[in-house]
Amino acid sequence: MNILDHIRHLTPNGMDSYAGLVSGTEGAGHDPGMQQPSCPNWPPDLFAIVGSLIEVSACYTLASPDRHDLASHSNYLDSVFAAARAWNADPFRPPTAVKVHWEALLTHYGDLPLSSICAHPEAAKQLLALFAIADEASIGMGWDVTEMNANDHTFAALAMSCIAEKSEAATFMRYLPTSLCCVVPPDLAIVLPKSITASVGCTIRSLSHHLALLPPRSIIDPSWTSSGIDTSGLVGAASYDMSLLLVPFPYKLHAKSFELSSARDTFGNAYNIPAYFKLVQHWLQGTEGPITGDRMAKELFLPLIREAQAQSGKTPNGIVLPECALSTQIAKELVESLADSGIEFLITGVLDIDPDTGKTYNRAQTFVIRAGEAGAVVRQQNKHHRWRLDQGQVDRYALNFDYSANTQWWEDIDVSNRQLPFVGLRQDMSITTLICEDLARADPAMNVIRAVGPNLVIALLMDGPQLAARWPGRYATVLAEDLAAQS
Image 1 (cartoon, one colour):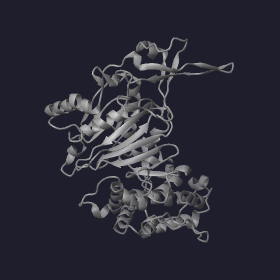
Image 2 (cartoon, helix red, strand yellow):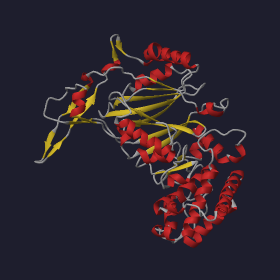
Image 3 (cartoon, one colour):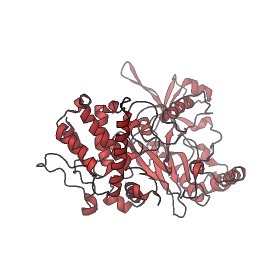
Image 4 (cartoon, one colour):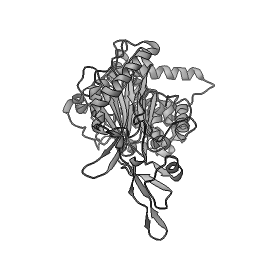
């Protein structure tokens, strides 16, 4: 496949990002008589197209400046910033600098095979310049725009209006909340806002500051939600302060909460079908009947919030509960009862059983509570990897749900439909959540997390005290070192 083929593959409905604003439908596709596609007029689309070419060709390895001619590199950076400003000043037409790079790329290198891009530094130069301009033109995208920076953040303002209003997104940014692109479908590539650029490693992730290039949603389906919280009164370090109320509920987990759901069985002469266990939320059955979210709010969470206010002088920004702590119904009731408490978000693990299929889901739910709005914005994700209990854990936790000769038991949950929500809380500040095993496994979430660079990664755990020497501490440290994030 050559460069032109790859571009056409990524843009099956054509290159006009604003077509939906005019007709309310997708573009008409590429004109077979047109020798080369026109330049994308929406920066995230250009970012996705050239970023994909940079990634598949690995020409990001050629991005280092000439250390013997830093003056030229300084001039190059000035030209990138100037082109980005010009594009924001006239958002419906790419500036001359972008068109020049685009036409040079397609005219001279359109037929160049992707595998040969690194062998042609001038082709890589055009790609890297377009990538940098598209990224810089998208400064602020994913967060609210202030009056002070509105002129240089036109695209960010357009994106924010679509993130906030579903009706606008339906006609323009139809792929929200999964992607910021307009013409590149999320089945082919995804672009989301970026919080932190990794300071180590040589990958395409190190080349951008405002946008992140992610794999197709067939691998994992990410999303971006803005908290919509007014932070205009916060200045300096206060705008990045984040206080969390961590509630380790349930305080005790009895052995009877673990049950054998499927015994180990033989398969042929040499193989076994492993055993599976399930969790039963006995801790949600109180002595006075089933626990409700309203009761939990009144008897536990509101008193804890008041105590936190008394000790710190301010309301916690968010509340976090462990893996499988609640059911979806109780979580919903709890958030409704905390709507006027002043918290901005609540993250909890839930355990759900689909009544139609009987499948069990171990989920994380993130509730974003917006002041003055009815209800909360909910983002949900299934656990990506099953927990495997071994004999050592069973002995340590005194579990006795299987009396057959066995040493391993897998968590009986459905792990399909993999999603990864991100929430933009402050300017350039975002969070995401992982569930236990997902912190330790590289696929499919870690590359996405490293690309977006959330400032806070919350891992919901269940199996005992999470000391620094245990596995969560090791994996969290690796992630934090890569991103300089807090996890």
